Length: 116
Image (tube, rainbow, N blue to C red; front, side):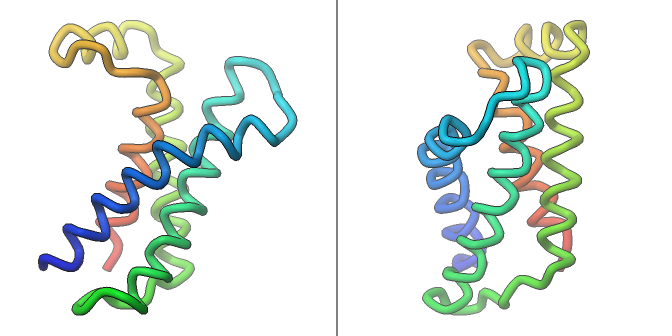
């Protein structure tokens, strides 16, 4: 259990800091579609961190491609939420200062965590 929690925190940190740098290197598709690029990059990074974490951490199983697909779907759902301004305004009313890139990141990590 502790290994999975550490893995989750490492995934959040690595994706948050390195994901935007990777997206900057990729071609831009406009502001509306770039959020989906974040979802794809975050999903791949989270899966790769899961592979490395399974080697290093105890009680963490090696992720399958199913985990990658669950992470990708979760990230795409999180990115799709940003297309609805009413939803993002409602969430910002509860939690102040949430950047738009946090939605696909949270979706990726939740999707990765759901699939066992």
